[in-house]
Amino acid sequence: MKKLIAEFIGTLWLVLGGCGSAVLAAGIPDLGIGFVGVSLAFGLTVVTMAYAIGHISGCHLNPAVSIGLWMGGRFDAKDLLPYIVSQVLGAIAGAAILYTIVSGKAGFEGVGGFAANGFGEHSPEKFSMLSALLTEIVMTFMFLIVILGTTHSKAPKYLAGLAIGLSLTLIHLISIPVTNTSVNPARSTSQALFAEGGWAMGQLWLFWVAPIVGAILAGLVYKNLSPETND
Image (cartoon, rainbow, N blue to C red; front, side, top):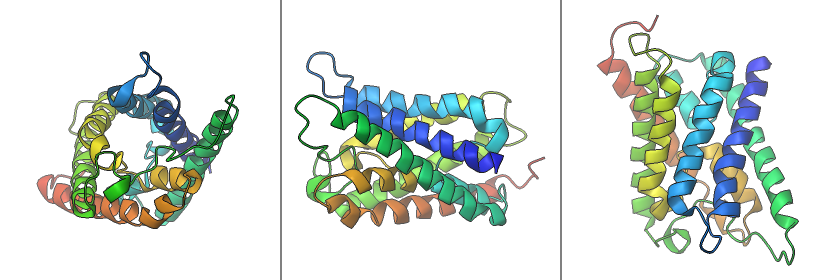
């Protein structure tokens, strides 16, 4: 239960910090942080939580990460569903907090896209479904390769959280224009629930399928790249 609570809190922070920066701070005239700032915000949420709860739950914060670690032989199958449920609930809680904050602004008329992920006309730069699918698979694959590599017993200790957070920052720098960057089904679900117009829920399937496919591939590949037992 302690691990599940940690995952709930950590994923809440990921959504509140990452999506919150996009919704609240990215577009302020002259002072907005832009997509570079949003990319850093997502990376910083992972870095801070890695050192805060990594020793409790492993700091997955993402169903795709849990699935990739399971495929890589690093995570027990019996914990997979409870972790995913905790992550999704934590993400929704973070989005609900963010929605409450946003709705308190003077002249509030709606949340619009609410940093939801999308493709086609809902892609920030109008990229196709195929572009979005490929981007999310490849970015999640590389994210899991970094996670599996930096958390291996042979890797330098204490640096995993920093490397993982920086890799998520890089992923956002690459893929925000394509899909608004998911690589995390929990994050995508939470924002889709609150985005206006219903389109985000209609496209949500891609942001579950692609990250899971990328994670499974990474788990299989890394298991073969690193045949030594992770102590």
